[in-house]
Image 1 (cartoon, helix red, strand yellow):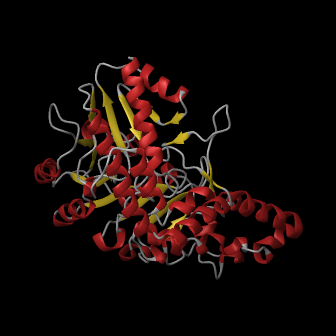
Image 2 (cartoon, helix red, strand yellow; image 1 turned 90 degrees about the horizontal axis):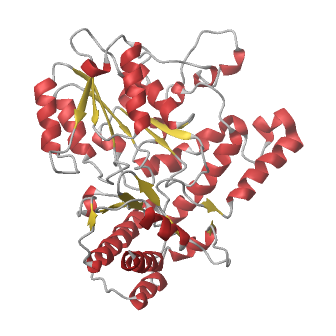
Length: 423
């Protein structure tokens, strides 16, 4: 796409954007004068769809009207509410509906998956993750190692960027596998790195692991709703994600989990279980031995939080209408425009950490500010930009294609330019 550095170009793109009407279906935070802020922080918390309050209110009304009978008589019966979301969520992560379950929260699901898929032996016990994984991933992995009486210093292998670089190279990943293939029991990496914005080649990672008979899973916290991981086709063993970032389900909302079909009917796999994972045909018999549902639902513990599911349903309905392929196409153009405008600033104090290739990133660009503290970010915040600062010197900007516009991107860069000039 050929970009032009002008407001008129941005406005023309918005006028011709078939997804632009979705913007009006979200609540934007506003400035003191009542005008909307420039919200570029969907990688931390997605905006609230205007229809979400109606979805939540429907559940409250049904709870008031039916009490416990809402499990069967609510507009969206609570007994099967989570099952209804499997198909639209499966489209977003590239899976079969039976491989997807909406449950718990991300790190809880990560622990549950490691119970099933991390099987250390005396020789083969190490876990490989990227060095700058999101802290919760690192904490969870280290605690799993400790649970098995393994010192994290011995059991953790880190996939690191080369000296002087910010991005991980797949050749280095493959070299680590070759060196430690007889010691690695599990590979667990983030699909899209929260800090750099680098989107890894998941198909390449899975193939390398499968060649060495190593189990592999992904944290899609910054991938679900952002890139298409195609989990089923690439053959990942498992994946976990949250729904409150790009999937706009609400703060701290419910998470999601993928288990490949080659595993879901294997009852010999160890798992921590609860009654909602029991086969639904006999779940309420109460006095029978655990019989897992023969889908990813078999990893559930408890009945799902209906109010949280309502927020998830609201957003997934919008994704269904927009079409994920259309969203990804716009995302590439929108982030490309942001990259183009930042380059046009021609400022030696700014660099983009995120890969230049659209195939190696989602919508986020991580902008490194040379010799800067947080003051410039605070200036942007005062001018009505909602973004994200990460120590020591990175501003993360994520134009979400479902509700952000080309004009948002243009206006942000103009404000950034003014703040740099003021410095």
